[in-house]
Image (tube, rainbow, N blue to C red; front, side, top):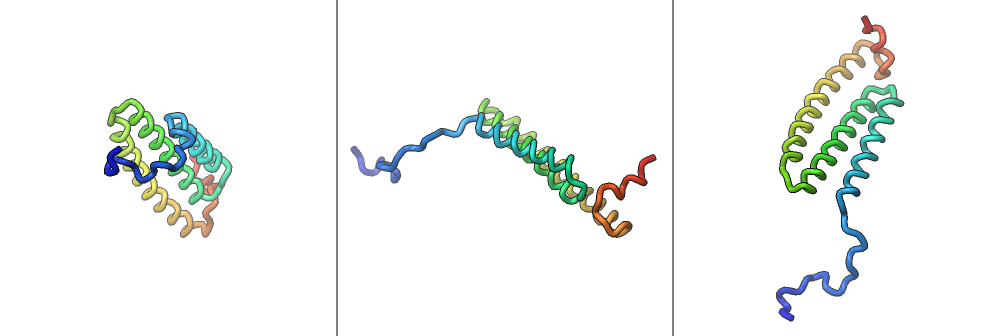
Length: 117
């Protein structure tokens, strides 16, 4: 056997599992559910916006996983749009949080209830 072609890992145990599409989708689903639970149960605006970002990232992982599985680059293109929307959402969220904190001295989401029409 040619020594130039042998791998550095030759002789080490092989990996127990190969990572499949199901693994990525499981992680994406767990991240999305954690983000959803956090968004629905917390009243702190910063935590709510972080949970929204977590849900965006979970959707991005699922899109990239499906894109790679089907050997199509469309999923990666959509992730660029998701990241753009997430950046715009984060900028608006930060502005709203700063505005609320300056007016009410609190980051509780219930402080926004008087704005209902």
